[in-house]
Image 1: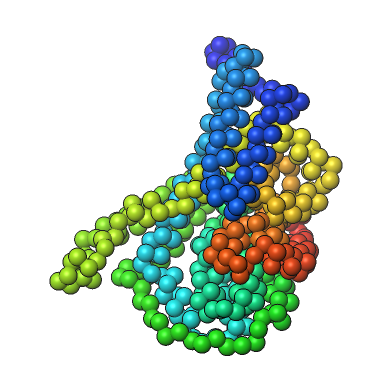
Image 2: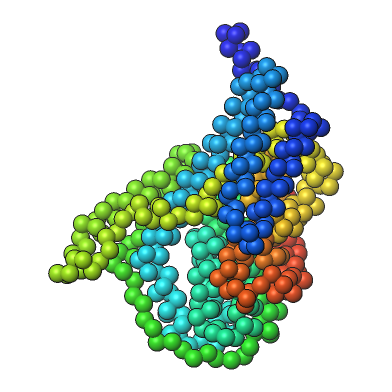
Length: 449
């Protein structure tokens, strides 16, 4: 027993590497990797590649230092802990992405888009409609998918009207990010906070009104910049494929399963999500076996529904990017850098100032490493402060077009019409919404602070 106790103590012992050459090298490697991530639009180098390489190098350096100091198992235990956190997040997102891809294949989103286009709304009506839909769809689907869907509508009806497309895309990015902030499923940052057990499922909905303010205030000001015109309506009709509505129902049932597993039997939400994936697998088997109903006598006209093609079409670059980020930030934390940052931000600045700064930082650096760093620091904060950092990390990315996945994706989809500088022009208005949402949260949820 004493031998086992000594081995356990040695494994949990850590070295402060913040002032060492290895520590400085790890910081330099992470900064270089992240510069390559931020330059993805220009270099066309997938963002997962530099961070995966950086993660491997950082942990290799840690492993060598610990082995030389007679602590060969400490680094192993730490990296396994980070890997467990990543695997829960990755499998959760993989199930959600598979459902979204299945709905896309069944033409759920195409049908919604064609319905919006056929209605013949004016530009100002479409500006509000796409924004409101983005705000309410992103809490269930992710904000990236929601933004791409609404942008497709704007592009289809906007035509050559660059002014309308530019302002509408800015509104969609703000709305999708704001909508994702009040739901555990709406953004990666809220998902991480929920999976950690810091805020329960229903606790996030306290952010609904602050999130709505974050979206509505800038939208009300930008409304006057939208051309008061009516585009020509399109008569194209797209019908959903067989089983589409049942897949939507199964996705909602999967969310209920994940929440129930977490709230009532205290299992990780990812177990509920993977159980929900089985719902889709069995239903996909049913669709495949009964496809003759859809095809009639022409069996060759219908592509069989295959669940594994939906899994293969998941955003693997994004999922592997999360791996690199979690392992890089975890490595820097293990070296002692996050403890230093926590001391400065949360002990010297104070929790409120630190959490507001996190939101501003997430406009420059992706909000995922920022939020993972905060969760790794795990500062002593009230429920109100944890909700504040969840809000700021979620909506802070709207300040710049490169601050969120939705903004980056739309710059590619509406290339030349929605641009970095076009978004930057409205930054003061967006910042007004950011400040107002923080103030509203601190006012209406004051009992939580």
